[in-house]
Length: 290
Length: 299
Image (cartoon, rainbow over all chains, first blue to last red; front, side, top):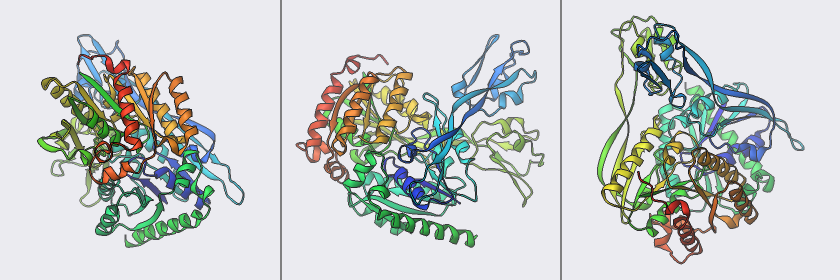
């Protein structure tokens, strides 16, 4: 099972929910941090990293001996990553989407592909506290200055195993990186805060989940701040509110130090267990409906 | 003209609330909302839209079943796994969400059976607000090319700053450090990193600081909700120093931010005397007096 935790707006509590939920479930859990631009889960879970792999994307290299400057590579490239100027071919690796069009179209076989590193994936385990079991950990890190995060997100997700409970911590927004982090999930848990910004961005995230046709539910974080518009919206849209985390300075302070809610307020373990139970039921209902 | 870009790395640290407050304090300025993915600045600015234009992003491959002979070359060529085999009717179809718009299948299909229509991926607006003009946008849900739309709204904003002889462009940036963020900071006078005194705030601020250094853009930093964890706020000051980033100040936690947001206003309008509003004024002064913002950039 894959549970993707998303939000639209940043800073609403995706990582808080993902980390606390993972630790609460414990058994067979694998947490996959797909916010590869700014991953934070590791700051709360302190995994022991024991595996690293580069995320690479192929980019073209032109063999000047074979090239006849026919410009077919430049013509097929929709991203402006190849320019043929007189008897010179210039490539712009940061614009390349690695579609392979230049290589496929070259009549002289003058294009080979070389590797460009976009970022890395780190894998490891989270050492259990007393009465706990080990959790598997994976996250991706986009290299500073690199543009393209979706290939890294997709590679993080390849570490998900259907027999595990995979918890994905998604990036904010509603465009390609978020879609990459939600596609293929059995359930999307949306986390919002009850403020006008939270609501506005939630409506966008809900649209995205609907396009993908994934069952979803809502966690309202910092409940008590703002107003009731998020609840009214959820009722109108028939989105189940699965949990509310009240605005509580103790939680905010624990978060600031990298502590989990369930560590500083152990009564939350029951609430997160209940959250998981509801997610499982909703995902199961959908599976049977299909 | 000068441009200040407000960034954070981590989402939800207060970029938009702060940008709104700055708009209230600045004179002769234009606003640009470069968070086209989940734009929120309009919720504080109540912009009156004067112009709206469709944003034509990339193209999308669509197989014409009448011409398709089912050879499967498109599926073989597609690096994005966007070509799906269908059983009824037997043939191939393209998943529009996965299609990267590279056009490789379009150009190489032996039957020329793949159309490649240009997609409208969003919309951008030129508006009037109570503080000055504003350029903003809305990227369609699940669309690509957010970086291109960010670059477009910034270009359009700059063009109008020049035409209207304004002094300053304040750009509300997106979270993260990837494509849209990189599109939002090129050639800016200075970026202001808004962070919070948490482990994630610090971690994410450092990555933005490195990004700014990578592109050689001067950066400043400020801490929002500093009193949630004063020790972490001190740590941020030290990190700023280490990265040669000017520390512009710190803002206390203040529920007035949310109150103002609920009213669709900036904190400067709802409670100018609140402790947070006072701190913001000091930050604004520090930013405007910084060497990076003194420099006129010829753009």
